[in-house]
Image 1 (cartoon, helix red, strand yellow):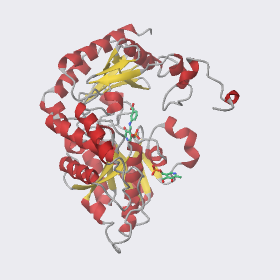
Image 2 (cartoon, rainbow, N blue to C red):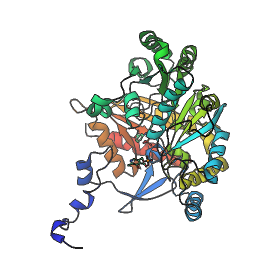
Image 3 (cartoon, rainbow, N blue to C red):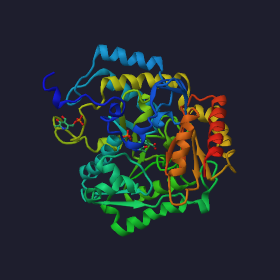
Image 4 (cartoon, protein in one colour):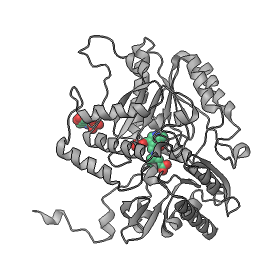
Length: 451
Ligand code: PXG
Ligand code: PLP
């Protein structure tokens, strides 16, 4: 504790929050009026002042089984005491293999392999790299181009922001994004698909834009197309009827891999384990994270069809087949948390609860009952996801929804906003009375907006 003069004691309060440079946050605004979540249980957070906050967003689209689940807490503690860490490069551990086997049981048909990462961003970068290396392994190394979509979010790695379609996430880094990338148009157009209940009828033809991109660049230069089956972060853009099927057909016709980014849609959000099963469309690779451990320990995973993996399994058997991996790939604590999470999902039927119990349709009714409230210009829903699009305030885009987010928090409800869109995605354990409470709070907030 020498040289205290070089480490002046911070002025209390203001500086207590200064050290954490917060992610995707208006740091100065937050630190001037913090919204502090101190504990959580079931459907609720509790603030540092003891106020109860209904979780309308499953944390950040990830706490699918609700908060503080004892079985997961205990599994993590047991694993930490048994095997805290083991290298996964050239060594292995039982819980990693067991979790991969269990995941395969709920995966879409033909998906026999799992590659572990620590986040969705890493899962996306991993899937893009597998796609490039796959074509090389098969003798088509010139397939290097990656096709993303406007208004898509694929995390924040350089790969993910390159194929991603959010200008604010790209602008500051635009000199050094991946070079061989193109984008499809997004499918959201209020002139044609406002007030859609579930999938919009209009818009399947937008998948044909992939044929234009193929004609422009040549199919033999394109490695993969990556899309979120439902684009969630940019405001809940639900795929038009037939759109994903058409993307699949075009990719198959041209030997292009199709990657579904299911970081949000995986693990029951739509009422099936994966969106691939919900929509009846089989991609070649699936990226996941978030709900895979109920968000208790960071973990991501890429699911691969056997044929993708098997294309790498040649050459001398002492050689590494894929030069890729993370120190914490398949971390024992994350795998133990994931196994306990899967047990809960299965015991409580959570991966299909939204579809099986009529929850999706009660949810859709509740979302669309907001029609006519102040500033609401669109409502949309799918599975246990809802979006309320507000008319932007003149000259201040985003301000109205930001105000709604702050007001909702004051009223005891956690919502997520992007631009002037409110996104809702509560834990899959939500009960009807809590759906009522959620939407009556939203109604009160919208009626209270100051203009
Ligand atoms: N792909 C998709 C489709 C995602 O939704 C990622 C990749 C990246 O995952 P990680 O674990 O690296 O964050 C995501 C993450 C929001 C919000 O409010 C969404 C995400 C993350 C944070 C906030 O919409 N999605
Ligand atoms: N940077 C350095 C200097 C490293 O040694 C490593 C891993 O050994 C990394 C980055 C990558 O870290 P991780 O494997 O956790 O992604």
